[in-house]
Image (tube, rainbow, N blue to C red; front, side):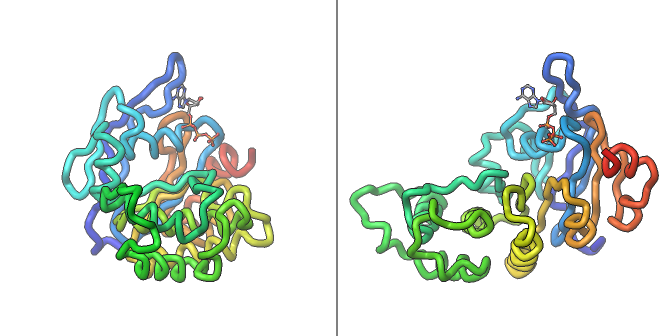
Length: 249
Ligand SMILES: Nc1ncnc2c1ncn2[C@@H]1O[C@H](COP(=O)(O)OP(=O)(O)OP(=O)(O)O)[C@@H](O)[C@H]1O
């Protein structure tokens, strides 16, 4: 892993909301090719970290760099264009449009092309978008209304949309939340394999420790706005303090 260059570098991040300290000196490097899980109790500041990295929140102190370039509090759309994509707990799909239309809208957005007189079906990136749907195992869904898909497929289409932005790093908030327990591992398996094929690193917030054990290369434990522990899943998930504060809750 160490041969991969550092993609994201956070240093000394601090933010508070009234009396709540949601980031209290966060330092973290994310390298190309890795899948890093963030775990920690509710309110520890996990989502806040993702929001700072994607420009949705301006930290009171500290910096975020991406491939060496400072991006702290830059407009989210600029950060996306540099190569950081985001997927949310609730997939951001246009439910009344087909899956393919959702993909084509993403392609049009990437190209900053919003000509309403131009039929979506004629957009040149159609083949590329179908390939991305194939990558996440959803090519069979392309003609279906996004709102009619089961949650697991909605999540995967949302990931395909994020990949349409050609990111180098994907930040995800609980990628399989809302997916039926029986389908969670299957969805994550497809997701992780799609990211590896597309050479995209990931940071994902996760509450399911089995998922962390299986899919994370490293785990960062958040606690009251700080990183309490960082390391390989086998080491971190066995730590008595982590078991007490995170897993035991
Ligand atoms: N925009 C905001 N305005 C005010 N308070 C906020 C804001 N964003 C986060 N907070 C507060 O900061 C703290 C950290 O929130 P955050 O959502 O980052 O925690 P989390 O670790 O992601 O929790 P969870 O696991 O429940 O999603 C919480 O107390 C939350 O209420």
